Image (cartoon, rainbow, N blue to C red; front, side, top):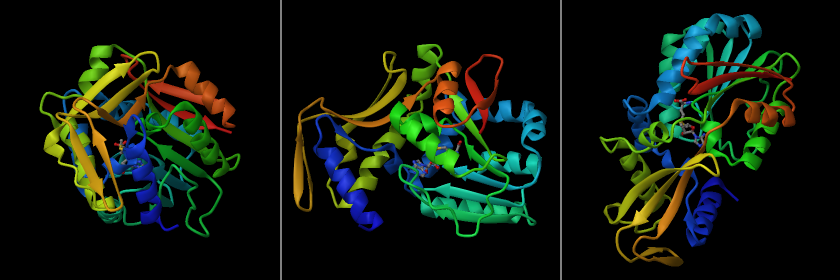
Length: 307
Ligand SMILES: C[S@@+](CC[C@H](N)C(=O)[O-])C[C@H]1O[C@@H](n2cnc3c(N)ncnc32)[C@H](O)[C@@H]1O
């Protein structure tokens, strides 16, 4: 099945579930990627600036543990903003930027090439929820997998374990995974980060409906839905949903679904971890040597995991 047929099947299956769900990877068309960049600059959205500060403060430590050179492979690279700092510090020979948002990725890669003339920069459009085939001939030695932004939080624990296990298979004993995780903290801080006063996160969430309309030919009216975000303490995750303002039918070629007023579509989970629990997950995935650095408030951790 080609990518678009597979997406179509997956999206329709999700819309027909009760409750309906849309995988967060569908947030990222060009507009979604640009809105995410806007989110990273919001006062309420602490993860990006906290993670960047941790990496800057502890950059020398990270360099000392992983060494310079080799290949950096960033997953969910987006604008490649965090890779810039890392590449300045580690001076790798090549950088592979993996993302599902094709057009946005190609723009980001062009900017990286302009900024780092000696660096070989390879874009790879791929979906991390499946097996990622790295470019043929990519050297195996000294690979540093980079997965920042607490993107691992979009996967529930069994799928996070499966993804970490796939990461482990991509590296040898001299490789490592540098990964950002958002830590459990005060609920008000967490909820504000996913429901900002300016409404950018709401726009980001609602944009998925326009993206779906293009992907499957559905007739969602985004104005008929509202953004809902809250912390589910029992599951240790932020949940984002879209809630129907009134009863409505949504149609697509070959199918339809009715939503009652107040019915929700679950669009994202963002799991928050306790360091010990995440270390245990890493150990189960085959990473036995782990180091972590955090900010003074202990809000966000950058973890270096080695086999
Ligand atoms: C939360 S953003 C993080 C961006 C950037 N790494 C950062 O830390 O700011 C998630 C990124 O992962 C990409 N992404 C989301 N789901 C994906 C998937 N299933 N496969 C590949 N990339 C994905 C998005 O396009 C987006 O660029």
